[in-house]
Each structure stands twice: as C-alpha cells, then as structure tokens.
Amino acid sequence: MKINVAKSAGFCFGVKRALNIALHTVEHKKNVCMLGDIVHNEDVVRTISEAGIKKIGRLSSGEGKTLLIRAHGASKETFIKAKKAGYTLVDATCLMVKEIHKIAIKKEQQGCKIIVIGDKKHDEVKGITGQLKKQALVIDSLKSIPCIASLKKYKKAVVVVQSTQNIEKVEKVIKKLEKHIPHLEFYNTICQPTTSKQQEARSLPLKNEVMIVIGSKTSANTKRLYEISKSLNKKTHWIQSQKDLRKIWFLNVKSVGITAGASTPDKTTKEVVKRIKDFAI
Ligand code: SF4
Image 1 (tube, protein in one colour):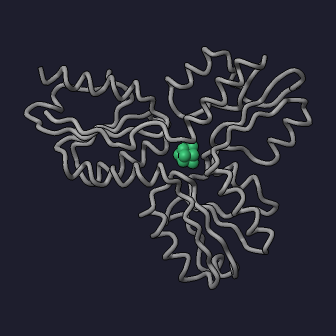
Image 2 (cartoon, rainbow, N blue to C red):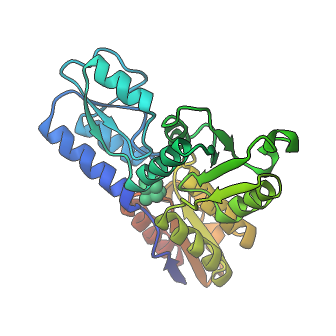
Image 3 (tube, rainbow, N blue to C red):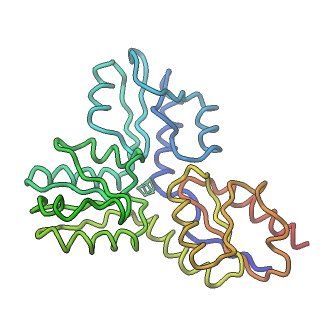
C-alpha cells in the first residue's frame, strides 16, 4: 500500500510561531495565562497546560501576570482591558492575521464599510471586527448575505477573508456582492499555508483510493480540508488520532492520501502513518 502524505500537512508557520512564543514566555515569566485554547488541538493544548500556562475564561486582576495573545489574535478592547487590569502582554498573533487587521483598519479610515467573510463565532473573525470603530458585516455563507436593499446601502466596501476560508466558497460570495455593491474591493487574505493545504486537499483525493484527514473536531481549517476531500472522494475519513483508524477502511486498498490541519502535530500524523502500515502487514 502506498501512503502519500501532503507536503503541507500539519503545523503552519503561525501555529509554530505561537507555540514557540508560548513556551519561551513560560520559561521566563511566572503566572502566564491565555484567554481560551492556544489552537484547536487537544494534544497541543495539553502540552501548553503541562508547561504551566493557564487557560482563563475572562480577565481579572492582572498584577504580576502575563497574558499571551493567541495566533488567532484578539480585539482592541481585549488589549486595552488587559493593560488596564495590569497584565503584561505577549502578542503571539499570527503575522498573516495582523495583516488582515491592518487592511481592515486602513480601509475603514478611508471611509469604506468592512465586510468579513468568515465564521461569525470564530475568534479570528471576532479579533478582526474588534479592530474597527464601526460594526463590520460578517458573512459566513451564501445564505447569510443580507437582502439586496441592505447591500445597496454599501456604496463603497472592502472585503477581507478569515485566513482559513475555502476560496471557492469565498468567490461565490464575492460574485453575489459585486452585483449589488458598486465599489467593492476584495482582498484575498486566505493565508499561504491554507491555500497550499486546500490545493493538496483537491488533488490527493483524486490520486488515492482512500483519504485520511487528521485534526481536532473543533478545528475549522481541518473541517474545510475534510469537506473539500469528501466532495472529491467519498472514502474520506476525518480522524483525531491513530486510535480512530479502522482496519476495514484499508482492505485491498493500494493508495492512501493523508493530510492534516494547521494545528495537528507531526507526531500525530507519524503515528497515523505507522498504524496504517501495520494494518498492511
Ligand atoms: S492558518 Fe494561516 S493565519 Fe492561521 S495561524 Fe496558520 S499561517 Fe497564520
């Protein structure tokens, strides 16, 4: 059986950087905490917690404490509140996410309405809209595009995109918006690691009999890889670790494609490869 692992599988540079910053910070400072999980992966979250970084639900008194801002970023209000509460801030926001913030802030200052294509509940999207003075319009699917009468009020608008969105879905939304907004500027802010992962998630399922997508069920970028792969190859399975593999999936199978979300450690992928190889013995 041939096993083909996507070149882009696993940690992106933003997640690697955030983890390095987190582990470096906890080595040098006491009382390090973060609002929520560092990334959507249970193994990584465990590593961070074992290193001594505490997850908190909300800000309290920050004297003598360090608050780590995660790769997804955070709103301006969070930064202001944290400083006021006395926290020392360490910002691990991914540079690609910072770039989206910069575009949105600059374009709002130039008088444009800001539209974000992304998942309303995702922290990255909340961080983007939380940079702005006025309320941004968040669109997460074709269905959530406002009615034509509402769109007509948007004379001049700029679209930015959550870094892990699926470009095909985004393009459909843009086409619809362009029909009703006279001056629409589109910034494709899907990051390079996501683009590479999605490209491979479009080619591997066509070249392999079975596809395995590895990542947490809470990971939005893994979910998109699974959706793309499943639409091209019905024998696509989304697993969190080698424990979820079933021998029956590989009976008489000659080729298996594997990809993994941006927050899936290489160790998890290696364990999956090993177990599939063991099935073939
Ligand atoms: S998925 Fe992209 S934007 Fe998000 S952390 Fe990774 S590199 Fe940064």
